[in-house]
Length: 125
Picture (tube, one colour):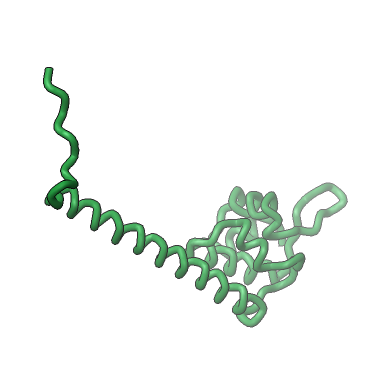
């Protein structure tokens, strides 16, 4: 199928498909005249790519999920990598929550400082 047909089958624009190609997320066959041709399994791959983008993954991470394979993708082929990605995000969330808690403590202290912890008075003019 050609790029327009793949775009119609997946609901993704031809421009987005060209971007996916630039990022090496999809690899089309080329005709002697240079036209892109995609196999039927590319529909499922593009749907996977879209789902991964919606889940918040970037193109570099998605490329890593599909190691060197322009073939179709199944849930089993990426499940382990997705678990690792989720665990990485969970760790980031914990770090952000800890940072928020420290900021909350500083906000409380700034609003009601303990004796001896008051900020210095502004200089008199």
